[in-house]
Length: 407
Image 1 (tube, rainbow, N blue to C red):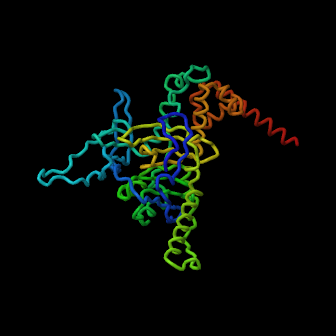
Image 2: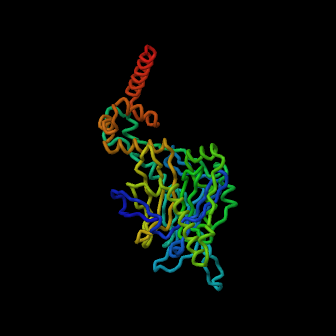
Image 3: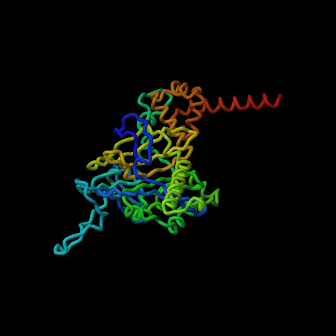
């Protein structure tokens, strides 16, 4: 999957194309409501490698901001990317050969939780936090708050913006059936990625450079974050149908015919991927932010256009100079999260002017104020303005109710 263009954070749109990266979809496997569809590479990427760094589940990181303020976070795992400068194969960390005469293993790398989401650890090693990198971009939407001290916003909104900003997510261990599916499903020899569906709704996508990387990172899917919709679907829908491979015996009269039938069947799996994952691969992404360059590879994160009535995925990618995808990881936003992103985008486009934003959304100031309140941003508005809009809505509702009763 490669983007049609990557130019830092310049205007898009970008549309992802899976086929241009040499990735094809394989036959899926089903366990209850969980469907995993492998992504296969005929030619793996060898000069960039990924491996997980697992943290102690009982450990929390504590960062002192000042004498009165601390930041506490829990990070289940990180990914470490290793690459080479000349295109020669790179090895997953911990598997490099060492000189027996030296008598020592590769030196350890210290853990520092208080650094950036993506940081260089050695000359050709980068540690970054999967999904945290993408969600940081989502949480940073219009984080500074109103650029102009409009009278409708509170002093806190003008001085502190959206700090603090938080969003809820579920760990993979809380998704019914996911742990069993990851444990029992077969990993294909050429597998370099997976599309994870819950009740046939695309929950996440993972692509890595090499099959060995995927085998190492496969268990980390259980420690990843998943949206509210995915958690609900796993509880509401107990099972999804299986799509089995079917070869037409009447068409097979030689080895060449058998190969043609297998190719036709594989094309069907790619068609299934196109159907179920169109919300990710068929969408246009207007914000792609370059995070780090790694000798011909670019680590970027992307945001969706936040259409309230469509799927919205945030994520991060690593691409090479030809736009070929080496790494991808996504998170599906809930409908409420997409609405918040949409409202923040509209506010930012109109400098947080309520009247201008309301006109762009086809509503009035009161309607926009109530939408912001329902989205969880009511605390940014002055209480008297918010109370007046609520009272107006109640009066309008009572008047409508009386009119209906007369008829």
